[in-house]
Image (cartoon, rainbow, N blue to C red; front, top):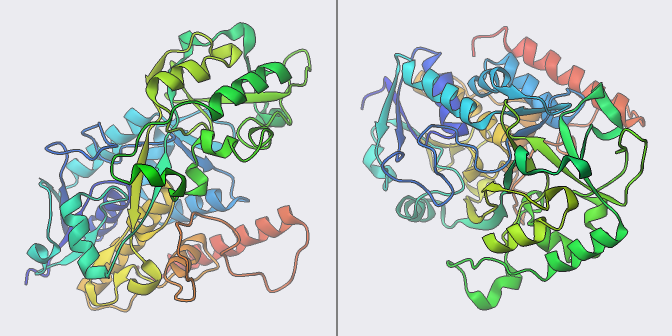
Length: 443
């Protein structure tokens, strides 16, 4: 057994973060990825850490769960956060990136690390790598043969469907019907482009949306389309709309806090966010969709500011797969039946880009500790890192579904604080103090 090399399968957010954490601890890494020889249905870019959905990593403020997770990871030397910060684009209080520059920077850093060996090869059987410590980071679109292999090992896989939103050109947006500004004018920011609709325009748009043709999902029974399991955080806008005519006005088309330069209020507002640093591309916030391409063009053109829209990437819907982590994984992301094997990323049931990188960070650190016969590092659930790992491995969770960062899973405070903002700030202070103390030991 070659005890000086750790194998990682998959060069997405989890795989790259795990590889970095391992290599930074002076251990060699074989990083396997089937790109560019083969691509999943959702991937097009040859670079690592390709963003197939939104370019936003959510809030950057530490009084939010997603912002706190980012800061915890920055404190621990996260490659993903370092590259995200360097390639960020304006997005109000959120951390959003230029997707091309972000993937390029990650790929450059991984390829230039002297201890990371990149192997462009599709792995179809974990047993072929059994002589090393291995980390599976193949994501929610694991290739069929490897998925079958993992299914046999884990006694089954779970799956759901999620969707991505369209990306449009700035030049095609009619600025006579749009205005820049953030909700409640926070940070006096022009990071969002707002496209208002009046009541009549909204109702026309709504009725066309709920009656538009959806693309077929070829790998499921066509007669069971109504039974598709869809992750709530990536629900197609057309499915969400069918819950009621005002659902979108309380969701992605919420007009609250948005006023133009004349202080006008609106019935509904579609927000667009910068997709790249030059501002030539924008994505339609919250408009994940599985409509046919021609229907996306037709229906979204009913939004006055988008009447001439040019779509450069259409929204798509695809299957995501994850393992039943509460039954098969330990808190350090190691496999219960073989602790030389780790899983990380969305295949474990963590939901989100940064959450995936977070699991890779934990698996990477603990794979090195396993190699060195050291005690596992179990992050306490007073941190978001620890709360996520605790949740996805909690055997009392019966109907396991993907979970992203949130304060509902973090350990309660000793003293009850009713004011939400104060409570969240206290969560943040407690967590960052814990992480800083953790850094004082050799991890």
